[in-house]
Length: 274
Length: 294
Ligand SMILES: Nc1ncnc2c1ncn2[C@@H]1O[C@H](COP(=O)(O)OP(=O)(O)O)[C@@H](O)[C@H]1O
Ligand SMILES: [Mg+2]
Image (cartoon, rainbow over all chains, first blue to last red):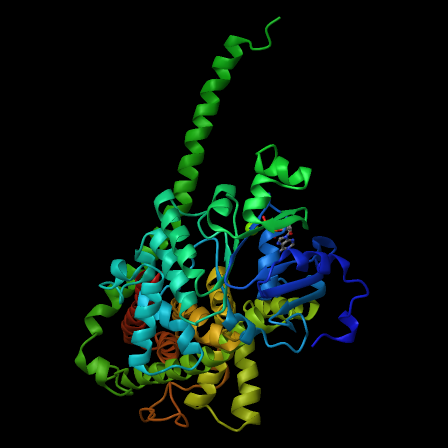
């Protein structure tokens, strides 16, 4: 699948890590991924393998490249015209950084939930039906079913079932975020990328979303950026610690938090900086 | 040593306070000046014209006899003009704005086009009239028809509509289009389903305001040879026509011979103002009703 240009000479880092990934299949695999905004390098030699049907947390101080990294996974980062990348990202074995790769296809399989709840200024129903509709589903009955199922899966059906025709902006922030998650589920992705999905929410809504994320792991691979280390420790299976665009440490969440191998990781998780 | 001589400070204090009060009055005066002139204008027009407005005046044809003169032809002409302008400018204006704002690569060329559109919005209307005369009336042999007039007026307001539509599109928050792209939507799907519907109330508001500029313009119509004569009511795009501002213009000229024509002009002005008022109110209603909150 790989282009000759992208073939790497040494695979040492990547092999060393693949041994620590136990028997799980990885859904994403990045090889020497570098990314620049103009002349500023935001990601440096990222080699990560992200397991299927697990929750992978990305932690690190502000500006270390967390958002940039997960936006690279669905190529949303290309919305910034000055972005350049090198290396490759394999999604189920295919290099998605290949020019010919169809981004629309990728984004159908790799859904995204954003930091600030961003429903469309439409009814709750139309928000959820948006994805299926753009992918060509017109049948009202099918749409009804998708809407109900997605909202149920996002733990918000009971709260909005009588308000499906109302504008989504009438809901509370926490409800809006779960509607956004439901909207993402409606396209039946394999992976859900979440960029600090609870940072704009109150503690109660946050715990609801966390609970939901735990549940979603049964069916989806989840990559969640979080500012909140307790959150990473609570919900994730694996954690990557980013610093200045580099991955300092990537390990099972339990190991990373209880027994970090890098001094900088330890400093960060014990709150000595960041 | 004391720098602040209390006696001096006291003396200056008075002057400072007086200047302060005077400035306030000066600015109030500027505001009142505009309002008073406008009020006098409206009062004079109403005083001269209101008594002349009746059913016959509204529905009648033009007549050499001022007592029987009516403006139905001019009203219909203006409505036809509006129809052409709204269709042409919305289609071309929104299209151009979408291209410039959402598709065109940001760069030197795009900047150049942008600057020129802004400049075109400032070109005197009579210049558009000359362009319309050359292009539509003569070259394309349309004659002084509804279509030629409408196209000329469309050129005149296109820059305004393009700029207003671009601003409306730019005001659509990026997080909405991101959400759409994030679900695998193509650019066109995002434009069609998210960006345009969110921007359309502002676009319409801009379009209606531009339209009200178009129907008040006289100079381009004079240049392309729109008459104010006894002509049949316009019934289609290829018919000759006259419009409200033309009627006002000719009757005002005629008033030097027969003073009653001044009253007819005033009455027509009232109708035109009423039309403009309706248009502008519609724009405000649309803006308030569909204003989005995010
Ligand atoms: N659109 C952009 N243009 C230029 N630089 C950017 C842009 N977005 C992010 N950056 C830079 O990239 C670095 C990483 O940013 P980001 O990925 O948003 O960090 P995080 O999400 O970890 O806070 C920062 O130094 C930031 O200034
Ligand atoms: Mg971020």
